[in-house]
Length: 73
Image (cartoon, helix red, strand yellow):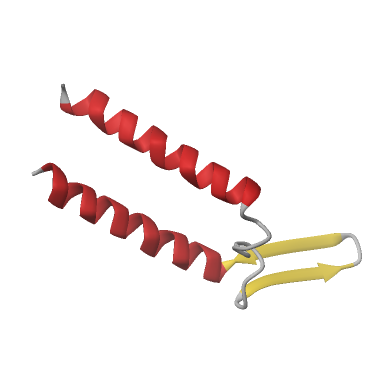
């Protein structure tokens, strides 16, 4: 199989798994409501900065791509 279709299939499976985890695992995995996720709510203005969630997702994706590179070579 070509490299590009294989990469797209694996990326699709990973995105599907993450989507299902986000949809059904929201009670168990509090992504978006972690300590360090800032919410500023003042009158008509509301801002949300998911700092901790972004760091955790970045580390998780880095680990997934690192493992992918090791396993494919």
